[in-house]
Figure (tube, rainbow, N blue to C red):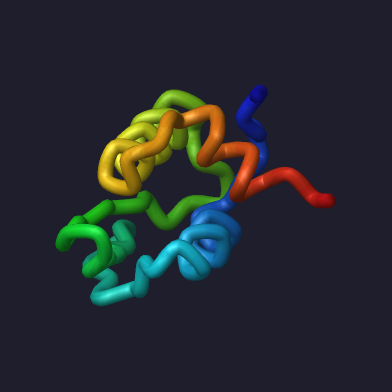
Length: 82
């Protein structure tokens, strides 16, 4: 699946919330999200209007590893509008 080049940090935060991630803090220009299930996991998201494609890919890979799935399945689950 192709990742969006115009995804904002706000959109990514909203997409990760149904997976159990919650915003735990914001320091400067970075948002820290925490998930307690299946294991405690932290992810840091840059607070930008448009997240760079490489940064988005790395964040999704990290989240997918924690959820024991692959990045493409996770991206489909998060961003497919069906």
